[in-house]
Length: 278
Image (cartoon, rainbow, N blue to C red; front, side, top):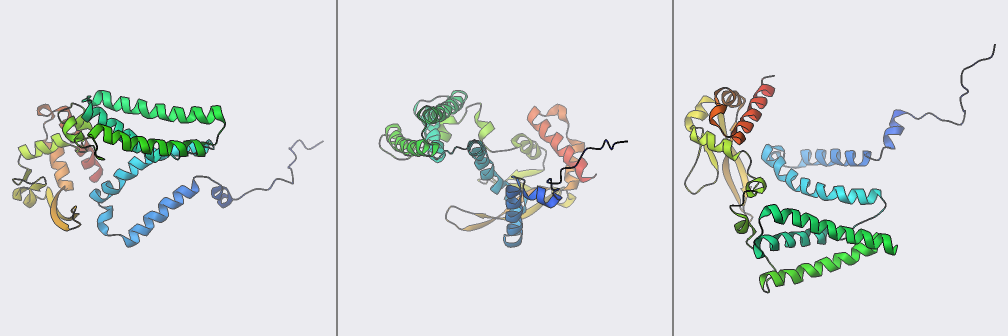
């Protein structure tokens, strides 16, 4: 009776788990994140990993991450785009000119900027494919072209200046502006102020907790150091909601008397309270 089991090729060599992990292409990125995190955990101030500290470094990281997606896709395809920095600047100029100089609303200016940037990228790709030139050379040329157009465009849009100001003033009152203001849960803060949880001093933008809320243990004050434009350090107090405060808000907020934005923020607080209390 013959053996029906398949023959094993002696030339094949089995690899261990460690060898297979070392060959993974994403290992470098993961290892880099771990090393950078460990380095700053050991050397940076403890405030870096507070909520406000994480927001401070994650905001530019998110912006650069969006750009990195496009650059990574090009590199996977064996190409490279040197004009990405100049394109970012020129797209900003295009958007600013659309809102300030031509007075277009955000609902038109934003899609127009995306379409314009996509057209410039399509021209780059078309030249690379049709001419056979390396993408390095083509995008290097567009780097200088866009840089020159940015300087010329600024002077044309401003009458000779190299700065185009007034974007915030031009978009103030636009119905899309609150979505890009960076202010989160504004409706909830207004509800807290209306119901005697927090307040602002005259001429100040920082929220403070009422003394009775501090005594109840639902809010706490935390001292934070803020660096001004003149590189001077200024200490201000930040209001934090405690676990007890999250539970109190989740129990007391009447969603029938709130806007949809406030109710959505209240639902987040209720979920946070459930997580805190397990």
